[in-house]
Structure formats: structure tokens, C-alpha cells
Length: 244
Ligand code: PXP
Image 1 (cartoon, rainbow, N blue to C red):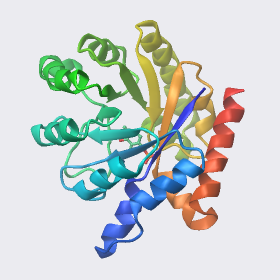
Image 2 (cartoon, rainbow, N blue to C red):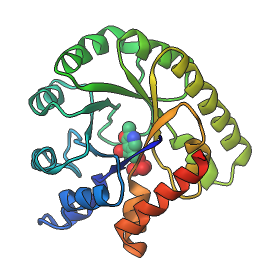
Image 3 (cartoon, rainbow, N blue to C red):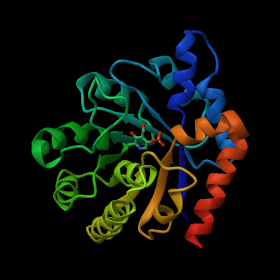
Image 4 (cartoon, helix red, strand yellow):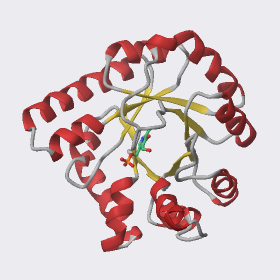
């Protein structure tokens, strides 16, 4: 069974454009649950550009499906995660000037620091996931630091597709396929996400080792035209079709 995690960050982006209370990301999360999301993903960034602390409080209260809390490896975020103890914590790299999470985490460069960082999260029962590129060195390092899950960054694959660079897209897809299999062979659970759309989801959903996809920006954009519920149901249908 391939799980769908719906990322509701960009409902908050639209809300924050005016600084008021709507559209409410918690309402979107509840609707996503109704539409068949297996989990909700939210990224509390250091600059609070979309999700804010109160959104995490409200999501923890309101959700019946697991929350996947995305965060950078900072002391501030660690305190927040330990207070809430969400089902899963996904550690992502974060740069202030970036528009979105541009690359995967350089686990191999910060192995010791990250091993110490994730230990208390694991101790309180959070499933710790590390967001990385399809790179064997990073996967091996994620395994060594004690992560249970890796999430493979599909952004490059999606960008190549959007730019019509199909040879490079196919090469990246081959890397994702090989690295999903490698990570699985080490005993890691494999997730994937970033930039996925109706056009790019199926080859990723078809990778047998991938257990969960986290998808946000495209779904929130598509919701403007189709509504959030139909957009999520269509994504779910495409995932199931690819898996079958
Ligand atoms: N997975 C991770 C780790 C992410 O950081 C993001 C973006 O916040 C996503 C998945 C979802 O990406 P998108 O919004 O492009 O679908």
C-alpha cells in the first residue's frame, strides 16, 4: 500500500499573503483526510513564511491521521518537536534565501551532529525521516545515524520533466529507482516527494520500495481549479493505477 501524505504548507502561504485567518490550513488538512490522505505534512520553517507555530498546535489537536512534521535540524525546532511528539519528523535542509527546499540534506558531512540530533526524537517515539538526494553516500550515512526512513528528493526529476530535458529526467529516475532499492536493502523505509504533479507521479509511485509520497504545492494549486478534494482523489487514483 502506497501512502499519500498531503502537504498543506501552501494553504498557509495564501493565508499569510493577507495576514488573516483564512484559508485555514487545518480545514485543508481535514478535507485532505476526507479525500483519502494517509497523513498530513507541514513544514515549520525558521522564518515562519507559511506554517506557523499555532498551526502545528491546531494540527496536533485536530488530525486523526499522522502528522509528518518537517523541520530543519535546529535547537528551536527540536524543542518544538519534542513538545508535540508528532508521528514522524522529517529533517530537511533549510536556507533562508531559498524559495523551497532545494536540495537534500548533506548527512555524510554532519553525521555526528545529526546522530545526536535525532536520538531524542527517536527516544520519544517519533519516526525520523531524512530528506536526501538519490545518492548512495547520503543513504549510507542516514542509515548509520539511526534514521528509520529516508525521503528521496524528486525535485530534480520533476524539474527536468518540466523543462523538457527528458534524457536527464530518465537518468534521474533511474537513480531514484536504484537508490530506492539500495535503501530498502539496508532496511530503511523509503518515501519520496517534492515537485510531484499528475504528470510526474506515476513513475515514482511505481517504484515498489517507495511506501509514501508527500505532495503539496501542485495539489494546492490544482485546488484553485478543481477543488482540493477532487485534486487529492485524482492524485490518489494515479498513484494506485501506477502501483497496480
Ligand atoms: N517532501 C519534503 C521533504 C518537502 O520539503 C516538501 C516541500 O515542503 C515536499 C515533500 C512537498 O513538495 P511539493 O510541495 O513540491 O509537493
